[in-house]
Length: 404
Image (cartoon, rainbow, N blue to C red; front, side, top):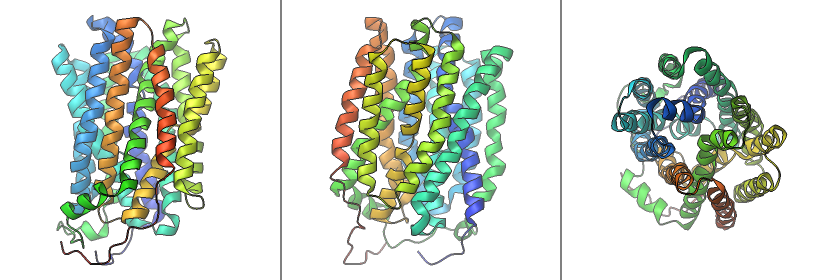
């Protein structure tokens, strides 16, 4: 790809972080709607969990296509389309009167929207607009700033539910998410403004074949599956888990907000360390740390204090995998097809998310407890730590130029 003038670093980080704040912030609060919606509609927890599971699977499926379009035509069009779908999905989530419509709105529409408004697309812009020496740091900074969305939006969503009711709260969020449209103007990359696709040295098919034949890409993808399983299970089911143990609803809101607050620190530190330390060791440390945190949480009585300590520790490890994994992909394969390759890695993340959120509801309805899913999350964390250690982070050798 020929050299193009770059956007300013401040502009990329500010607009990217604001978009992720809205998109991810709203998404992290969906667990707060589990009990209000199931009680009002007379549905089971598995019904709600299945819709969120479909959302995560749709996010992964549409993420690959969104990455391809963003790499070829620029992120602006993808972001605008994602914002419109997000608003429609939230409105449908509020107004659905049947489980099928609820699954289509909450699952398919919002999942497709998240594919076009979150990390894969934003990090593609950062990868192309920020020099390699600062890329991991920039991704960590954007993720950290975006993590403020969880700290800000989860209590806001809890307040909206309490003051407006769950339906009106979702409609208010449908209006708010459209702010992504003006923010995306700040991410219109100079090389894409003419509306013409940018020519690459590799075709899409060549880039895909190269990545999937490379063992390190497979290992990063396997690790990301575990990340999705753990964070989505906890994010969606922990509010109900805490209610089952007799804790007040505000404890769950504060817990999720604490995860978001400490996630700001965790993602920034992980991204910064990724510039100086082997990324594979950072990822292994994060995954084994999550398993230890869950094990300790299950070993002590469930009290507000233990919940808040667990949330703070888990927050440090929550999305800290994201900038490190994305920077690893960029370092190995370059940035020409970064959004697309991140989309494939993230698809694995969403397969794990689907399994984690659905299995949580399924096993709860069958056993009356979340305990088995917690222990599965611990075992998967150990697996992810081990599978990331052999990753080779050096740029892949391409001795013969490939014609697109």
